[in-house]
Amino acid sequence: MSENSLKKNAVLDDRQLQENLKAINPKFGDFVIRVAGEAWGLPLIDQKTKALITIAVDVVNQDRVGPGNPFDAHVHMAMQQGATREEIEELLLFLCVYAGFNKAAGYFGALNKVLDSAK
Image (tube, rainbow, N blue to C red; front, side):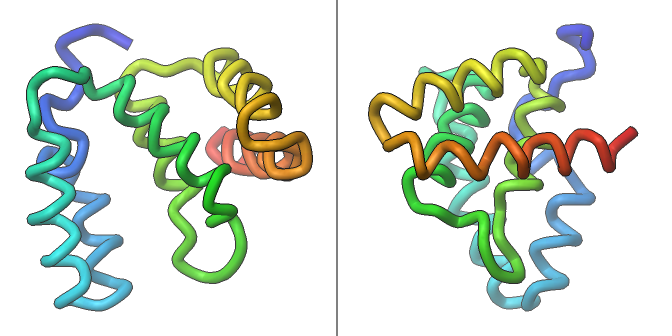
């Protein structure tokens, strides 16, 4: 992925993400876009790192279950910001130590499902 194709703000510059958030609930979508867009606009941490952090938060919070879970969107967001499958897999391995093996385990399967369905 070229540096020019990366989004300057992974929330405010992604129209499909915004439509998906509004589809959950219009007021919810507008709120998330405003607040998350501001957080993603903070300048000191790059967009790729922020996207990888969101995946780590998903693992720690176990947000992979239930409708509207953000893991798939966060994987796609990280990939759009230049993260590779290998980097995400390494992140999951790293999280085994700090979040717990059981928490990270299910995400390897979920990652395969997300990325294999994107082919």
